[in-house]
Image (cartoon, rainbow, N blue to C red; front, side):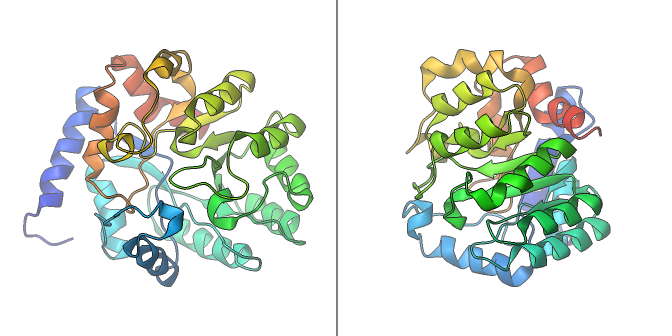
Length: 299
């Protein structure tokens, strides 16, 4: 990081004031993206084109920095633990991505060892390898991968992850644009077969917020992350229904802070302020921003 003060330095100070004001030791963010640089740059290129998977929305990348700078900035924000959400869009990628992610976790303080998967013949084998190598969390992206999470090739892998108690952050909602297998029904079929699977539904399941809250109420190992939810950006096209706000309090022990850093079109601080303006109470904010994830990952 440069020794010259920047807007990021000012923001870091504001983020630290936020969590210190809650009496927390820092933040835990379960939805941050780190992946091989050439893969990440292709992701950024896609956002730059406002492609169909981002709903044709204008989506500037706020933290378009080098990998080392991005990791250091999370440290400046006071993020105690974060993930390297990476995902394949075709067969043959996942094992390679898992190798990269294992190395990234070893050399990056604060990173929870992340892995991924895809429906293909060797998925059970490389998921087992990743778990045995110490993976703490998996990422699944139903929209980008364009696969059915209930695909038969994934069933033994889901069972393995359920037995091992390894959480899976899964983008299975139909936002910002629907995919062939997004929505609550496909993942409900997975949960019916593997009710103990520790699923973290990304983006609060937007825009099917109510339906994914239903799944969390039905299955006590289902959680939701706040990634991009409640922000001005998302409220402009997929608003969270006001009638369901009381349900957030009832599920307050199973909602986790997620941000989508660095791939967000606004400052990191805005996600925190978006949660704060829900006026959920200090205890809820403490749980969501730190304590729920600390308990889940035994930090």
